[in-house]
Length: 239
Ligand code: URA
Image 1 (cartoon, protein in one colour):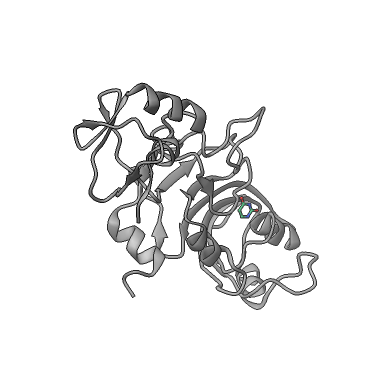
Image 2: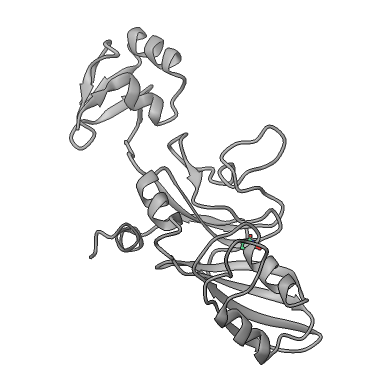
């Protein structure tokens, strides 16, 4: 699909629409080696080569990043006071990226950052029951009884019990370590589930969402673009 030159450059964060228009009229843009002074010139992103002030600007209609969210940043696109997860994606081309779902400010781990609204809808829709896997440290002894309760559904103060969730105990003691697989995404869900059995989550990290697994090589706060394979599996192109 063809798009206007000024839109192309604006979407790739070269400047605001009016700055970009002025720069094009000044003759700072080349398309396939020729100076183009018309902001409305149509560009085929798959075929045309666009340079702005001598720099090649490639087009990305969609971007997909995996972030290992650190504690202390908020799951939002922008905020006047706080650092957001989107601020951490320093090499993004587009300005319309958002996090797919929310992790609490103190939660770490896997967060998908994209501008693909359709994918976000599919991953977040309550009807789709996409698995989310968390690792957590829990103050208190997590027991086989908790496992049973979570498998049957917990009352966290909503209309219905939580859907069956799979609790795996890695270490049980004064401080326990667990993984928990849930198929919903209610506000503070993991913390509320443990609260319901009289325990407190002291550390929480998401490891997986649907087919997307947190890359172990990503340190806390680091991110990378999804591989083509990860993207295709997630968007259902591989089905
Ligand atoms: N459950 C929580 O309690 N917090 C999160 O950030 C994610 C799931």
